[in-house]
Amino acid sequence: MIRCSILAIWFSALSVFVSAARSTDEAATIALFTEEGARITLDSEGHAVKLFSGGKPQHSVEDLQKIGTLEHLEELALNAPAAGNDDWKFLHDLSALKKLTIWHGHEFNSLEPFCDLPIEALTVGGCMGIRDMNKEAPKKQKDAILTLTDLPNLTFLNLYHSPLAPDDAHLKHIVEHFPKLEELRLDFHAPRGFETTTTPDGLVTLQKLPLKILSLENINSFSAEHMMAIAGIDSLESLLIDARKNPFDTEALVEAIREKRPELDIQVAGKDAKGPPRPSR
Image (cartoon, rainbow, N blue to C red):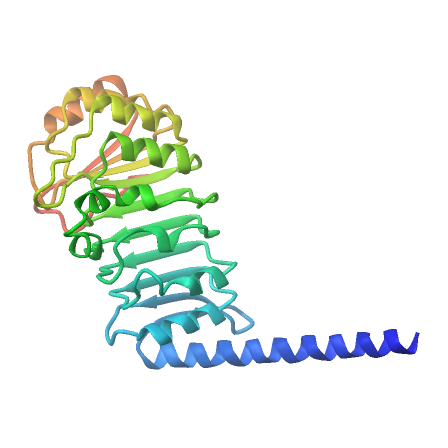
C-alpha cells in the first residue's frame, strides 16, 4: 500500500514536471517566433492557437522544429519555409492542427510531408520546389498530387500556382482519398514543357464529392461539355472561375452551366479583378 502511494506521488510529480516543461517550451517558441516577425494568436490561457509567418526573415529548419512544442496550435501558415522533404516531422506533434497553409516552398519536391495529419484544411500554393527539384524526374513532378494521402478529416483542399495541374487520374485520386471535401480549388495551368489533359469524364468524378464550393483557375481549354460535368455536382452551391492570370472570354462557359443550373452562384474574376473570386453567399 505504501509502495503504491509512493508510486502515485512520483507519477503525479512527474506529470507536473512534464507539464511545466512543455509550458516552458511553448512560451520559448512563442517568444522566438514573435521576435522573428510571426503573427501568433493566443487563447485565453496563453496557448498559441494560430501562427502565421510571412517568411521574412526566413526561419531556420532548426527553429521550425520548435513549432512542434505548440501542442494547442490549430492553424499554421508558413510562407517560403526552408524545410525540405525530411524537415516536416514536427507537424505530427500538432495533434490539434486543423488548418495548414504552405506558400512558396522551394525545398521539398512532393506532398508526402503533409500526409497522415488531423487537418481539415490544406493549402499548397506557389511551391515550385515540386518543379525545380524534379527536373530530372518529370513523371514525379507531373504526379505530385498522387503523393498526398491519409488526411481523413480533410474538407478543404486548395492547390494553386504550383506545378500541380490535375489530369483525370489526379482528380480520381482526390475523390478516392478525400471523400469529405466540401471546398476544392484547382489550377489547370500545366508547368512549362508539360501538357495536362482534363476531360469532361474526369470532371464527372467530382460528382461523388459533397462539394459546396469549386474554384477553378486557368480553364481556358474547357468546353461546354466540361461545364456540364461540373453542373452534375448536385451539392454544388458556388462555382468560382479565376481568369486573372490568363484572361479569356468566360461568357460561353458560364452560359453553358447556367442553362442547367440557373440557381448556381457563379463568380468570375477577370484581368482587372483585385483578388480571386469569392462566393456571394
